[in-house]
Image (cartoon, rainbow, N blue to C red; front, side, top):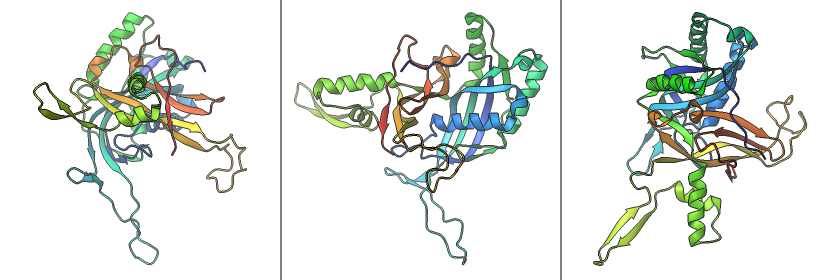
Length: 331
């Protein structure tokens, strides 16, 4: 399969300082925390549909920058979700507790857009008014299941038409990057997963990608003895190795694509259906000042019909890397 590429973009839309209450903190069957990129590509699709075809916009990619978060958990070493019993039953009795993880977020989004002819010829004033309209529409939607609260930031949505030359586009991103700080941008680090897999295989030739991913998803403690015979305990998350996280990035097919209406109990009998499992890789939270190109920040959805892989991709890694591999974990 050829490596998919980010579609050609005409403009960037910056939505600053969104406050999201009670977003979904369980982003996959093997991880919890900040919502993964699939939540935001889903938001991107919902926003485009909400605006309608008359908007003249196609949302192709989205960048995620976190300014702060507050997981709704309690406990010291072992964290437990704050759970509620709601709603009450028909007889007024309390319902059983259904575990759901919630998190409050403060984030900024950067959408990559393709413009139709009319929007491409629009004036800066028209694009600015359109950006405010999109920001108001976004406030009516859910982000990863969470509610968007009225923002306190003085910053307003900005729609920037990308210049023709690469140097001028780089200058535009440098200016835009200032409004993304302080914060952390989410990028893909498939390269770290495969580098660690190679390290494990040097010690154990039968080590798999799953072993490498699990090893990078936890903190391993081990004893180290010096020349004097003194032993000290160290852990695998050393300083300077970055803020690495396990990251669900999409789904892989477990079944053929069934015709609409042929699977009993399906939620929608007008849409084809297939069963899938979660796909995982490694991600990293980086300060935006470490990014030098807007393409390093953006996530975009891809689909390969032959392999049945539905995956969000990010081009942070080197442009000459032609193959990205993803770990499949059963849901």
